[in-house]
Image 1 (cartoon, helix red, strand yellow):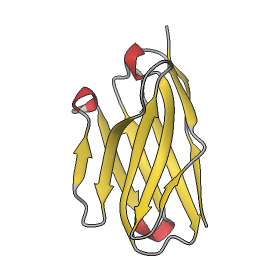
Image 2 (cartoon, one colour):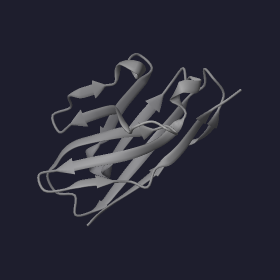
Image 3 (cartoon, rainbow, N blue to C red):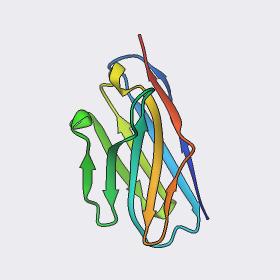
Length: 115
């Protein structure tokens, strides 16, 4: 079993920054992709950013130039640095880790952008 624990969410003003962290534990052998998804009220869950085992990064068009995904393999941790936050970024953010045989999700962390 894989356990994912997110942290770093909260309330921030437009233009501000937050750094999300996701720490994985348990059966996490052979990780292929680590990523962040988000779901706003009334909307479908969408991919925000991902990073493969080789270091290849993929971003949603809406966050290009503002968000940066990174990882620390030794700590089994993936990060999401969010800059220049907008009202539209308000959502529950979920950590996701995919291995050869599993697809695991965290419990989610709330990010609210409000003035």
